[in-house]
Length: 261
Image 1: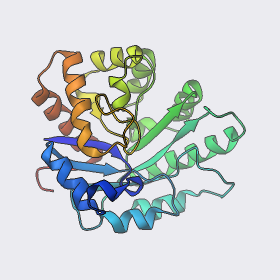
Image 2: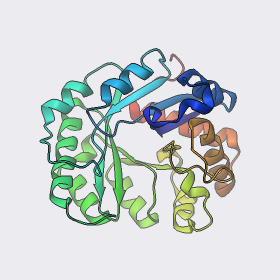
Image 3: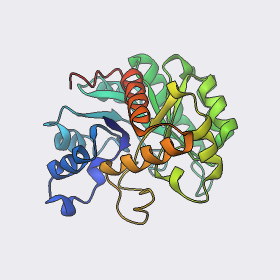
Image 4: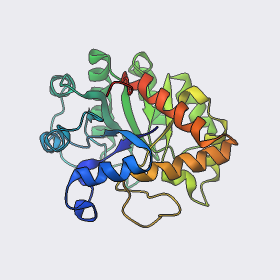
């Protein structure tokens, strides 16, 4: 059993799957992927995401606004907690900081990040954190706002072992995407190799970042198997062990009993 702990089902091109989500789920099942977490990136499209996935109990959801979303809207704890209280919502995010395209939105991103952490603490649900070119601010805000009280995951990890250790100390898990399979990803591979088994997760971040040998193609949840196989080889462990570890970690972090869903 494998789990895709981070995907964006509302952003997939369904044409290759017969135009419907069941085709995506069938492809996933054929590769041993039984559960998925479809992660929100904005609140305006969240009703569509909820409606798209509602018939499928094997799909969990999150609520949040990606740091790269543009606009000067006010984001409130009340707004996040109202949606975050709904059935099948297991996490708050994705949230965090992304300075890759400049620092013009830095103040707004930090304010939104703090709001997400406050909502997660109120709901007692974990955080899904995106960080890009913002290592120190990400860790500082997580520490300042008490993110360790609820924990969460640094998703699509693109940093090094030092960053991983500091996140682990804040009660966070680390999730590896298809990027770990790229040839130039040596620091990420080193972190995956050294990661404590009880904090390891895998994901696709689909439709983005397809792993080798599918790099350059639109990603989808079935291909989390390639990530699992690569990580297993890195760590010198059987695929079955990586599958069992990451599924157990997913269940524990997001409070989901995959055996009954």
